[in-house]
Image (cartoon, rainbow, N blue to C red):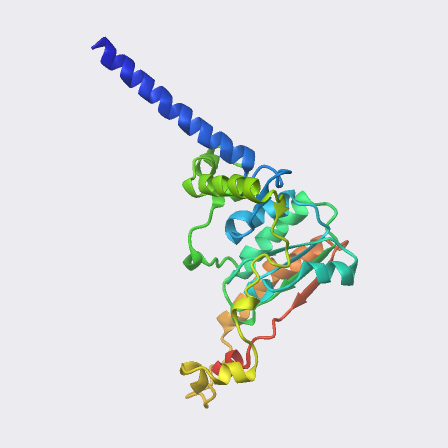
Length: 264
């Protein structure tokens, strides 16, 4: 009986030790930059917008920011640096709502008093949404990374994906001898996987080619759409600019494909 009890105690102690070790690795390496910026000597792959952007915004060195939906993912910070004589980061959120992007910008102004320029896309197809609408269809939010509640950090510290990311970071850094992180020109950039232009599009088969027909009826702008637009813009676009007059804001409507407009 005594030996059985000793075995249980030893087993529990071993499990706790392994968990503590795994958690310590996540805290030290910190693949999502929740606690600090990239460690010297390690190379961090930027590949998870929802998990890494908040940490990038809080801990990286910059004085300008590019953000928006996938329509900004192909932007090159190196070009923006040269044009505006600034130090940009790029933190896009694919398919994000106005509120999601604005929430991250508020974090930027909270943690970076040097921020002097914002380049942001405004998606016309999201403009009439409710001001608090979030893209929950994009997957669960790692809200434990966004808030200041240290207790729910257990969701990060003992996260299997985070630990796997740490193992890859350490292994890849040792193997290649490279340190740093993915440059922002390449971060989330999907351009190389697509062919652009009229000829490329016209070679496709599908319902997109059928969208240039007269609509069965014109849909008028409703009072609700108008009210949503006013509230959405006020809360998630103009308020932050008014609160930070020292910063230059470049807001733009992305040049959507003619297919998008044809569908309307």
